[in-house]
Length: 360
Ligand SMILES: *Cc1c(COP(=O)(O)O)cnc(C)c1O
Image 1 (spheres, rainbow, N blue to C red):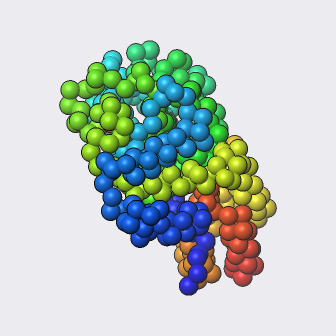
Image 2: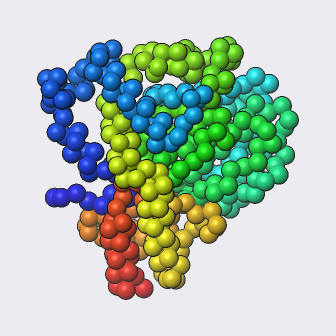
């Protein structure tokens, strides 16, 4: 069997060029006689790999010098705890709850700080982004927290909240490197890479230097203290070496494609044809408010559980995999990350049309 079109939410599709290069280097990385998996993270060769990965990410995102880039483990979930542990000074934080991941982060933060929910879209199954232009944010809040792209529900903050001068912390797991962003608008940007950037096992955190201090909650484990990692260039202990190496290749791939501007253009084009089709038929329905639609995760329903199960099964038989929706939304979800080709989305739409014709 050849390669399928993989619409999985994560771990997810990676660029074929990256996989092939990794394959070529698998047994003998550039003449050093071993795989990247087998080499010391303290050696010269690996030092080159991680430094180059960081340099390329800085270039791709335009990360200013006063921000640190950390390559961490523990998934996005680990940062749900690390954020309040590292940022709590006044013992207060504001959370905007737009989905399951933001809700988990909020609930975790409550263990360590007085976290308050300042906006939520739970009343309508997280199908929209609440108006965040004038929120009631406690004046002494240490930060305002968002999940920028809601992987499960398919919504995206197209406008960042008005934090009223407070630090913005964003989980960008499922929109990482999907478009250019202005890093300076954030205090902390972090994401698990397994959605849009690389293999599971790596979390990248981009943190403004003045937020990385020894003044953390006393309960903070050494490993969750950002300063531990920052002082040691992400090599305090053994990092997820191989995953970082693959991320480095993805950064180079993005550069070769024309950078984040090109990514955004491509992603918008893919999303546009899919949404256009969804809007043109009554058979399928998009589940979120139009103005808040994500260009990474596109959920849709038929409204008949049996037909939806049939859709997922037949799609799979046609080489379109990972389309089953999250259990909290039901229906289907197409994740169309950077590495999903335009042809892949066209193939999905062609299948949807055929399925509609046969089952409407
Ligand atoms: C997948 C996802 C998570 C959870 O990531 P883990 O690495 O499994 O902890 C958190 N936030 C967002 C936005 C996600 O898409």
